[in-house]
Amino acid sequence: PAAISAAGIRALHNSLGACVTELEIGCVEFDDRPPVRYDPGVWSTLSSTLPGLRKLVVGMAGEEKAGCIAGLAALCLKVPHPLHLMLCGFNQQETDELVKTVRAFGASQVKITYHIESEVYLQCA
Image 1 (cartoon, helix red, strand yellow):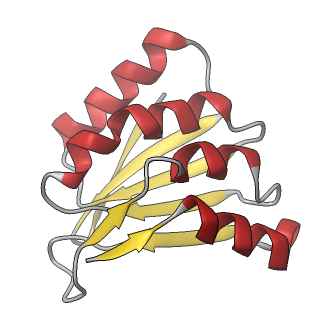
Image 2: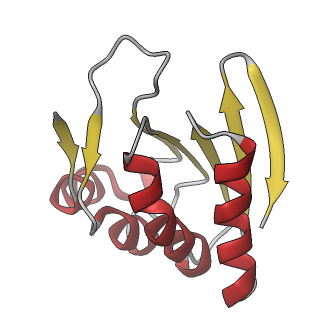
């Protein structure tokens, strides 16, 4: 499967920097695109680069979600500016787990929503 890497995020930052205000990465189960693997360094890199980023749409399918909860929580806690994180392919239970993890470690400037097909649901971290 395709991979989203920290190096790819840094390259995007070096090329476009603060110009990037919205970013969509990954895919979801109801997409017809192949699944994506996330490099563990992606989440910390996203929290320290792309200073103009205000909306991040993350799509995941299957087992990939469970392995990324800690990284997404770290992103929520470290990002130094307000951010809307939209999770595609996550259900309420998975989103609740992320919100619970974030709340356990402190305050966050991130608004988390999850998207299932055509419905959007709000969870606040």
